[in-house]
Image (cartoon, rainbow, N blue to C red; front, side):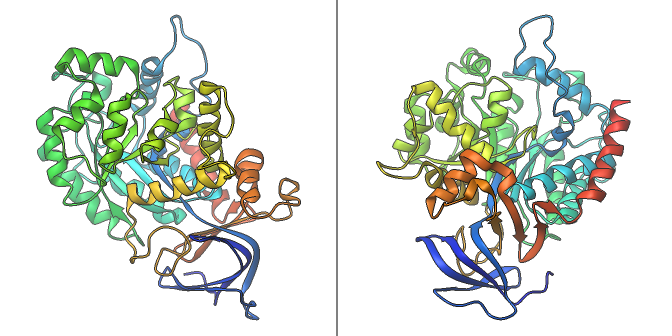
Length: 459
């Protein structure tokens, strides 16, 4: 563990707002004490601006290897579904070591971008020919190894994928690495739980890939296997998905889910792009988090989630990097707000109230929603820089020209809407300093392994 007595900040964002002269101590990876209005001890490391680390609630880390490789227009109109075929071709060649190498670089980039915990939505379970590994947790273990190597906090989300489409459609050949029945999935889940137990503040939830990829009985099995843990699934991401669900059961995806499943605060509905007003109000009333991935949703042409309407109903949101084509917490938040501005032809759409900072609103929504959706295993205290919470701290590069003359919420506004990941200076996770000067301490080695893996995959 990184050896230090304490960290002292000229200004830090605490739950009550911006506070000056803040000193934090670390105890077993958690925040021990939070002292305000105090001078630094002689041995303290000192910084100007501190924020709590954010949770990245939805990631497919291996897709980092596809960044920039799917931007050539096809013979017909491109869509999520044509992109999916390219992703399947990539997955067909991926071996366990390559999965670990690609995941490690994605995790490094998350830490360098201000994410200190990630929810890895893990549906790649079998060998390249679709045959299960002797160890059902082989690939889950590779994700855990990448998290351990980089130091990022991990909530692993083993994912059931059982069919090719609504109504029990047979999977295609390119989905063979994903496909399981509930019994085999239960073995993968148990192996995943064992692997994650080795991590500091690691946790394991469960996921169903989507309503189109599981039967109602399969989804019920996933819920039963959760044992009180968080439950995630993709839902209503594409208009075709909504149409296919209506053809299958006469209900829209979110509508069917709310009618047939015990959706509550444990659930994370990823994307929910095409949920209607009644569905949004009910999801909000039940306390579910909607997991938004604005950069990926824009890349795939998904559409725009009606965030203002959902938040007005008391909804909770978090952010994720999903396909990892760009890993930048600030960019996700900026893209979320800008999508609302484009849709509504207005500015500062998601600010909490007149006079409120849009950046502060977005940051606090993502902080609370991400914590709820991933539930890192730590002492009580909730998200943020509070005693008992994981010692996950991010500092901004105070000398940057983008922060000249800024204070308080202007720092968040400038990070999100001007500077982006280039303003991240240092990052601690569970009390360990992993990023200095914007660079992860193992970046060089992990870049080298990533490069070797990708060259082999693309040969």
